[in-house]
Amino acid sequence: MNQSEMRAASITRNTKETSISMTLNLDGSGQADIATGIGFFDHMLNNFARHGLFDLTLQVTGDLEVDTHHTIEDVGIVLGNAIREAAGDKKGIRRYGSRLLPMDEALLLCALDLCGRPYLVWEVTLDREFVGDLETEMVKEFFYAVSYGAQMNLHIRQISGTNNHHIIEAAFKAFAKALDEATQPDPRITGVLSTKGAL
Image 1 (spheres, rainbow, N blue to C red):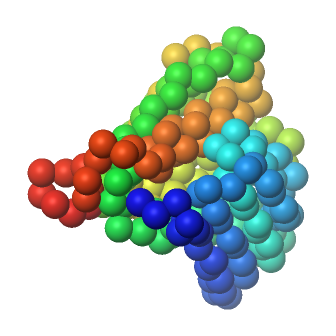
Image 2 (cartoon, rainbow, N blue to C red):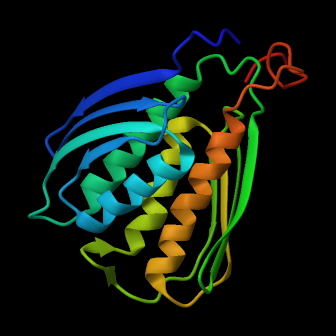
């Protein structure tokens, strides 16, 4: 992989429900400028950028007068698309990434495969309807949308945890660290890491 190549994507998506503009740089330094209209969601996406060392800008206008569903789901779709576009042909990258990440009493495992086949396994228990202004049931929907947009296998499993804020934040951070690992170049890899020759 040529180190001078910028692995980045800029995506705009407009529907009757949301208007989204995003830029993602996989080779960033953790800088973020995010405004979705959902404070706790912004906090999670800032954590994703910072802990994955991705540069992320995101501006969203969504139909929050309805609820948060369309905004969160559509951001997941766009982020997944941006990951897929920024990763390009995936030549020379590790493809797999995983992280077991603690946050106080919470321990979350994230493992992913940039294989071109979308799948989400979500084994997380959230027992509050909201954390801040975020509907907790939307966390799964977000990661589902990301997995399909990015065409990745994505597994997120809760090992322990009782505080919903800690559980959700650990999931986002674990995802960030796993994605950072999976997208890193490995000089030993020629082409793509697959016996099929394509991902």
